[in-house]
Length: 452
Ligand code: ARG
Image 1 (cartoon, rainbow, N blue to C red):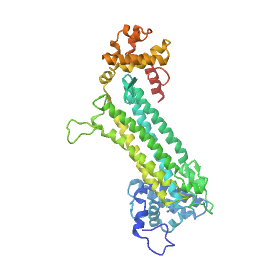
Image 2: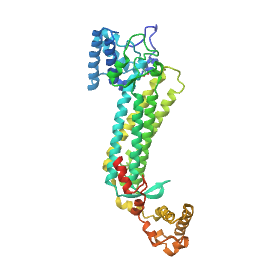
Image 3: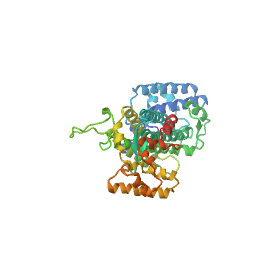
Image 4: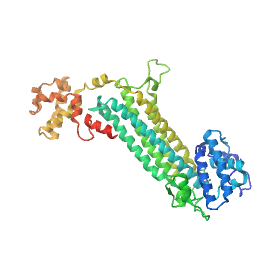
């Protein structure tokens, strides 16, 4: 099959080398962008009279018909060629003949591959941002529906304080918001047009790089040809942002897995989102959530992979850089499928309100409220902490709930206790009290819902 090089070689390439060096099996994903980039490039070459206008027009029409074949899925991918750039060049040669040989004027695959990757990244970051916003909306909807449900919030996976379940879920909306910001922010650095950097140093031909940038919807052109052909920061940034996003999705999944376990029974994941066991007929397992959690392995793996590939590479292009694609494609695939499935799962997620109240029967969860009660009466935090700690231990020893300790006995620990202290042993009261900005009171949570 035709190559884009070969003039200086006297021997045929060893088939092992051919097999070892090719990237078509994965870079075929870039087919559409490769055509679009080449169309803009050919238009520019014609406009600048670098190649005859007639040939430029032939190239554009040939590439356009290849592009429509790609879009229809009828373009044949020949897995024996070196890469997608070669494949499309070969197809164009076949389609239009001689004019095709002018397309690669003032261009190298080094700047071409960077252009293709940047176009791909622009499109994919946008669609991930849309999917992440979709999940955010789904979580918000779920929170709204269950705005009144109170659950034990954990630290160290131990009961800590009562919180609104919606407050906990909206925490994930905050994380997703930052993930979206990060992706949009790195989108600015992706939005730089590298074509015209050529192999390393630019070209002696009078090209118009701004024209190409405009044609392809880029807002800037790269300003150093050596940087442009050897920079993969934009790939690393996306992969790293996806690793963080994936970490958030894994934590979300873990919270739901815990809440869905028999010990908690707080949420019910719809049947259609669970799987069974081949041996235990009673099982309904949260495999979807476990896989979202587990696929973080792939996301972190991609990050280590690309960072290691790029480390220590001398300027400028090195073939190592061909290995940027698989980790990027893998990460994008994992994140897109995880976001889609979680969004759908949230729509069917049910909360068991009775279980929520049962889980709140541990009155030790109000210890902090009692401590703040004493603080409000002028006792220092340190002393209040100590007093309530002693009361909790007194109750544990005698197997008494806080509500079962008499006022007389409470006063033994501090004379500041009054009858109203027992009113604190109530989940609703407890969350209502946390009305500091960003706290878990319904008033604050409604505010969050409005701004999420
Ligand atoms: N397949 C190559 C890649 O993805 C294209 C660039 C080839 N450039 C070269 N100088 N061999 O990096």
